[in-house]
Amino acid sequence: MVVWERPEPPERPAPTALSRERIVRAAIRLADADGLGAVSLRKVAAALDVGPMRLYGYIDTKEELLDLMVDAVYGEIRSDGDTWRDVLRSHAESTRRAVHRHEWFADLIGGRPQLGPQALTSGDAVVAGLGAVDVDAVMPVVGAVNAYVIGAVRREIAERRAERATGMDIEQWQATSGPYLTRTFATGRFPALAAVVRDATHWDADQTFAFGLDFLLDGIAARVFS
Image (tube, rainbow, N blue to C red):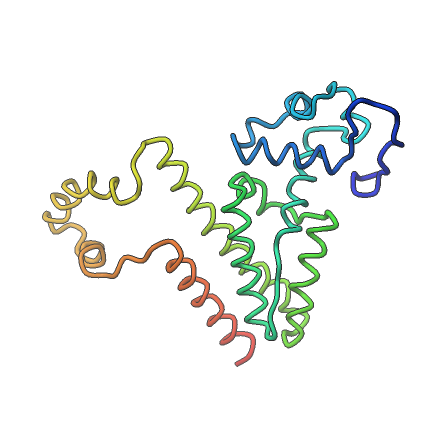
């Protein structure tokens, strides 16, 4: 029986009340503060001031705990709108905001579909909002948007982590790399790239995400509704 269907053990007299939800919230707080490396059943038990063995009545493995954490974050993702395009944009932007609140979430999505109740609710809302899309195109469309979002947010989280590791934000890093690129581009070996770096507008993360999403939605509109 999967964790979503397995009942919790009956309550019993104890100094600290326990539930699957409390365990998951404690694990999320640890991960938000210090990353997934800070999450273990032992550390979660310590955060809740209970013995580790008490957790096993609620969760069998760390993998189940991670699944429950991911599903809890899916509960924060909303997909609203009056048109298929609005729904997909809302889903993409809400997922991005969830990742910004929980960096570790970016590391745990993108593989096999999540099957927890919150993830299924989120997925159902997206599919329900695509009523104008042919049924055979629904999953490829949703998959394309999810792939874009996952790639974009992982790049953003990688930049955050690089800033913490190096102590330099993107502007400082660009300033230190500038002399090298100037010398390299002066050789004339990379004219197309040099022109883009020199002449193109450089958007911030919010603008980059929005433009990329617009490109994708425009492509979906042209392919699905042409």
